[in-house]
Length: 371
Ligand code: UDP
Image (cartoon, rainbow, N blue to C red; front, side, top):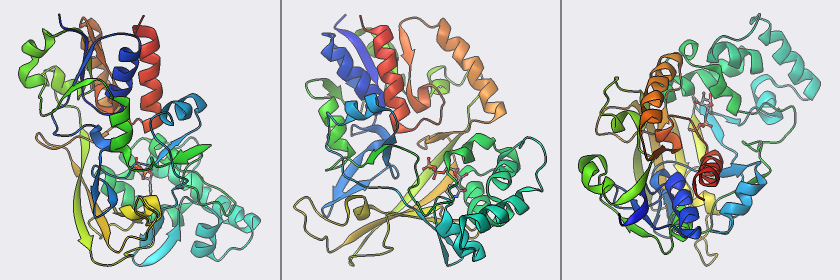
């Protein structure tokens, strides 16, 4: 065997695993079916702007170990995510904070806001059973109707009553004028883009792009003692137990000959009628400056459309509802019976992982695995 490890997928999980394996003196081959490394965090420079090709990625974590780990590979800027919600032309501050409550209800003090929420959450009695009930019990019906319902149903293609409540728990609710979207101690965007960061992780490691593992499995398996597979777990098993559901995303990118389109990196369109879920204006992830600190004259925007995954699409989000959870558990049993393979990452573990959690999971796996 030529390599100790064959890592399938050059995204964050694969790159961290490969980096650690190499550091421990193991031989590693990384393959990816795409023509580029970095998986869904891939960024590409267009007119001096680092465009997040597979959707906006804002690194945030409370895990100091992970923060120290990633900052070895890139310098991070001070970007703080503060998306704006556009509901039929009315703008609201996100996440739900005093600016949002003031705009929604005209309330001025935290007590007034709390009283409004209290009055509206009364309609939910008992433990919230789904996302709709969870949302109303967190922020009341007005905010649910204007800022949550439409966006969530577009993003997931499912009724809020059919979605698990944990999805909405990602969003903070604050009675302060703090519009930092994340409750995280550390946050930022790697200066120069994520692709450079992942390239640094993979420095000195052999990478073969445009290489489809499942289409050439026997031949590739023969190259290594062990495989680290970060693709969809159901695809690995030839969908033998049925297909897991994923949400996919499509982007319409536009280069505009103007310096400022929307004045913010992310604007969420929270009504049901607008067909896209959000528009990303990539230059604002780096404060509208090029690498020399000059103002960029143009801008690149991406309209994001959410759709149900079908074969041939890129899977982005696992649909972690009951039905899919049960099917995943069956695939997990098959995975455990398989020898010499590790399943990792958002697709390999069918989990709505954030970047920091993927890195933490890969580091944990390395600790357990690489002796
Ligand atoms: N969400 C919402 N309104 C918004 C933004 C988010 O209702 O304007 C809810 C929605 O249910 C969504 C979840 O919060 O699925 C997580 O959204 P986020 O944008 O954080 O997800 P990402 O796509 O960035 O992982």
